[in-house]
Length: 263
Image (cartoon, rainbow, N blue to C red; front, side, top):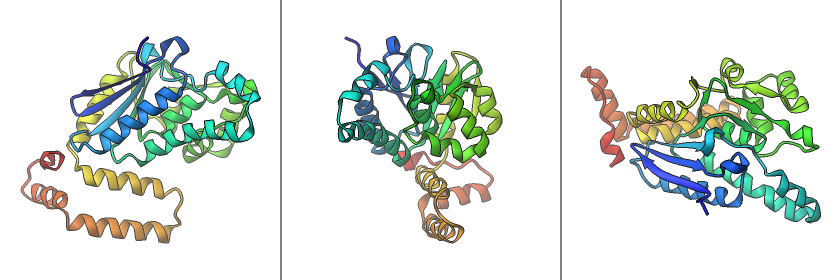
């Protein structure tokens, strides 16, 4: 039996592969456990610049396994809530990880797989790939933070179109809307994602972690609270070693060397 999750160090990135190609990498408890373990491992390793999340067999993730979801009707509401809660734990872990998480999307991302992709900090997608929040097509409603993530970049009418019709949306359209950072030729997403990880390696890890936190809190905070969070972060950064190196390098007209902060 093949491993449901493949985790390997690739240069400065931790590569995590949902390895269930027969189900188009439908979500599973084993995948949840493996991804959370990988995120925790990356958080504890300053040498990891980013986590690259992808799927085996040329498809990112088909979301929930409908054969499994069909059995949920026999469960109590509390049991269903607990099962959905496992997905939400994974989404929260992606958001809480101090390392940037990059989704590399070949083929497509559907349902909770689309929510999983949108939870990531950066997205690289194949030009031929698509997103689909097709819950409504099988009488279900979104989970995994999908409604929240869509509302971050799309106007209400477009969010309603995506969710109420459940049609596929091309990654090229999402790139135009700003939800996808980079488009790649089919089969090249991981390579582009790993190049992004290399670029992130040349940034200060503490600064990156703080920026990730600030970017997330900006969605919930009013301006006063967000500026207070920025003030605290900036005051701490100004006294830190990363800023000392970065400012010195800028004034000396050389490239900063943040590698020692990743030892």
